[in-house]
Image (cartoon, rainbow, N blue to C red):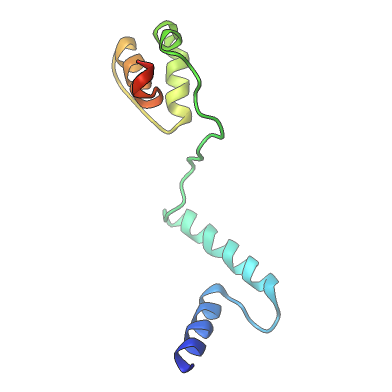
Length: 100
């Protein structure tokens, strides 16, 4: 029982919970998140887009270079190469094997 009490106390301390209630937890959590961003911690500017690209192989083969670049950049991917290489990379990244 003492071990459980210690664990709960430690967790509350880490989260910043005190007798003033749950609002303190939220404020402390936000401040820690800001610190991590400033110090280059776990948080990055990349956010996974909500949709998965739904292009066919023929659409990738006709896609203009700026559109391929935009699509790759949207998913946090960078690729230097010719247009054909970028298209092949995008197809490899976003098409299922049976769609080739």
